[in-house]
Image (tube, rainbow, N blue to C red):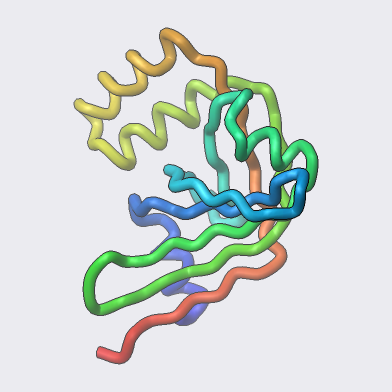
Length: 135
């Protein structure tokens, strides 16, 4: 995939598998919504989630984002992540609208923000690569 194709792919509402490293060195993988701003990838997670705790311990992460049907494509992002305890309601609303549409996204965000105890995970990529099946 070209850089422009990767950029367009990452801006689609896809589920990413976020891999973090547990304190014992074993991997932990979790499906997540994400927001890509052209430079960094942002994820919202509970402050007590395993992925959040893992990143606080070891910032190395990887994301795998793939299509579910042919033509098959995927993008891999490796880098380091930081955790901010900002609830990021604007980011949550942006992501909810992106994944669920404006009407349902607004409803979803309003419901989730009532009990918000979120952190924002920001991934700074060291490498982004992509692959596309030949058409």
